[in-house]
Amino acid sequence: MKDPDSVCNEAVFNQVYNDISQSVWRFAYYKCGDEAQADDLVQDAFIKLWSNCAKVALAKAKSFLFTVTNNAFLNQIAHKKVVLKHAQLTPSKVDNESPEFVLEEKQYHKKLQDAISNLSEAQRTAFLLNRIDGMKYAEIAEHLNISVKAVEKRMSQALKQLRSEFKNI
Amino acid sequence: MDKHYILHKYLNKEATPDEIAQLRSDPEFADYLRLAEASSGFEPPQFNASANFDVIHSRREKKLSGQAKPAYSRLLKIAAIMVLVVVSYVFISSLSTTVTTDVAQKETFTLPDNSIVQLNSNSEINYKKRNWKNNRLLKLEGEAYFKVSKGNAFTVETPQGDVTVLGTQFNVFSRDTIFNVKCFEGLVSVAFNDTLIKLPAGNKLKVENNKLVVYTTTTTQEPAWIYNESSFENASLITVLNELKSHYPITITSPHSIANKRFTGSFTHENLNSALRSICDPLQLGYTVDGNDVTIYAK
Image (cartoon, rainbow over all chains, first blue to last red; front, side, top):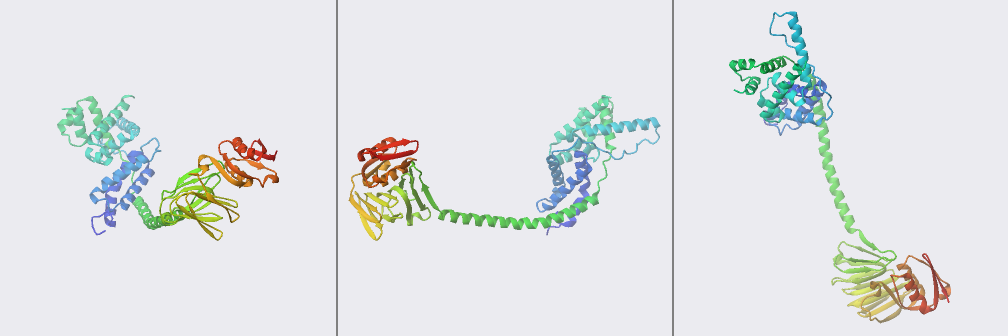
C-alpha cells in the first residue's frame, strides 16, 4: 500500500482497468465468441489481480490478466461452437463504387466472418489479436504463453484456411 | 526473399512498400493480403467497461468481507485439530491394551519392557502401555505364562490374588475359584486373601476358595500348556472339564455323581477324542461325542 505504483492502490487498479480491460475482454471474446462469458472472464481476471495485487507488479499486470484469462478459458470445458458476431463493417475506403461492388464486398465480408468463426480457437485468437487489435507477434506470444514461432504458424494456418474456404465456393 | 517471411513482416506492420508489392504479384499471397486487410475491418462487439467495473467492485467487496472469515476460521480449525490430536494422544496412550484369546486359541506377545507373555486359551490380559517401565501391572483372567525381564516390580492382578515379581518365569492360572501359581525361575511373591507367600523357583502353589491347598515342588521346566497339553495334579473333575471347554468349543453334560472325582494327568489340546480318553479312561468313565455336545457318564 505504501508503494504508489502498487496495484493494491485503488487509483492504480482503476487505471489498469481503464487501460487494459477492453483488450482483455476482446481477447476473451475472440476465444469464446460469447459476450457474457467474456464479461465473466474479465471480471474474474481483475478480481484475481486485486486479490494478488501484492504479488503482481504494475508492469506485469497486463501479462497477468491475459494469462489468467487464458487459463480460466482453458478450464471452462464446455464451450459451444463459436459464432463470432462482428458488429460493424467499417465503411469501404473507396467512396464511389457501384452497387454491384458494394454487394460483392458485403458478401465477401459475410463469408469472411463465417470463415473466421470456423477457425480453431487458437488460430482465431492469434489472428484477430493481430488483425483487429493490431498486436505484434511478440505481444501475442507473451499473452498466449507461446513462442513467436508458434504465433507465426498459427497466423499462416489461419490465412491458409481462410483462403481455402473461399476457394471451395 | 521467402514470401512467407515477408507476409509475417507485413502482418507485423514491418514490411516495406516494395515488399508488399512483391507479395501482391503472387496470386496466393495477394489472396492472403486481401483476407488480412478485410479482417482488419471487423469490429468486435462493444465492451461495457463501466458495467463490468461495477460488478468487479461489488464482487471485490464481497470477497474482502468473505475473506476475513476464512482466515479466522482456518486458524480455529488448526487449533481444533491440534487440540484433538493432543487429547486423542493422551487418551489413547492412557488407554489400556487388552489381549484376549478365545477357546482353542493361544497368543504370545511382548510387553513394552520385552517381557514375554504367553496367554492360554479363553483368557484375557489387560495392561497400560503408558509408563509401563515404572508401573508393570497387568490384570489377568484365565491362564498365562510370563517371562519377566529384570526391572521394577512386575505384578499380575487376578480376582483371587496378586503375584509380584522382579524378573522371573512363572505361570498363573486363575479360573473360577482356582488360583495356581508355578514359579520356574527366580522368586515370586503371591498374595491372596490375607496371606503372602514367597514362592521360590521350582515350586508351585494352588489356592482353592481362598485357601491354600497345595504347596509343593514342581519338576517341570515350563508349563505343559505351552506344548499344547493341560496337566493336573489331584484336581477336581469340574476344573478339568472346564479347562477342556477352554480348549475345545464344546458343551459337556455330566452326572453330578462324578463331580467329586479327582484327576491327575494331562490332556492334549489337539485332539478332542484323545483328550476325552485321557480324562475318562483313568476315572473309568464313558463318553459320547455328538458334534459339539459331549456327554460323560459313569460306566
